[in-house]
Image (cartoon, rainbow, N blue to C red; front, side):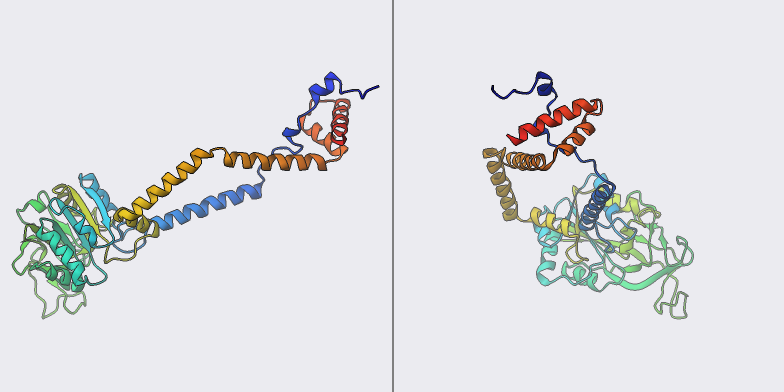
Length: 373
């Protein structure tokens, strides 16, 4: 007599081997904690790679950064870009572009300064802001501008924002670059020596240059009106000199007049360029993105890589899925072969709590016979 096959009830009750003998794992608390930690680390890496803590940094959102300056320029309708090298001046149309250089940390080489000078002569507007003067004055000299940053701290006991070290300059000229601007608020800034340039904004008559830096008006220091921003024509372009780079930082843009000044500068131009070539290092991910934007070979290489990957995927789209399925099937088969009869029964009881004990044992015995064949 042939071997009796399983009854209809057993065939109906028998779970398939593909379903495996182990329950789908529910994440444990350590696993959830590890996943959360991994996400936190990835988020931290992304933030660290795209932001900066450098003063005047275009990607620094803290009080001393200039992310808000970029936002104001963009809201005014200008196409905003950050350049990591002065070659960016040559690739940007000068006419209709305003470029910002804020407190450069190193001197411009003759070649770099020449690119900036070409930009100005070709019709660009260059805004140079500094409170020390050395490196900024070198750039002003290289582009053939007359104005110079004085470098001596400027104080005003009569017109200021909370402190004489924060003068509020209210003497605004009748000029398109300051249209609607009522004042500028400085933060430990200095004066600009025009030397032939046109003053745009002047302090009140109660200001003085604190030559000995003692915070008081000394016998060799006198009250006077001092320019804090000037403009002059150079070739087909213009150079604006400002005696305080912190006028443009996030914490100062909401001080009287500053935001309006930036907006007027931006709204008169189609593009706003932020020169980070001589500032603190840019965040690595931002640096990589700028490098790709500025390099045609890199762009071509990335496109070629993407096309190649797409071509491979289109030929074998199921490769990874098959590998995953094979691995899963192997693992499940191994697990099925390693469980004894009592283990099978316990598994069936967990998976099917509505079954009675007799039914569980019957199905477990059937699976056991099947496995031994």
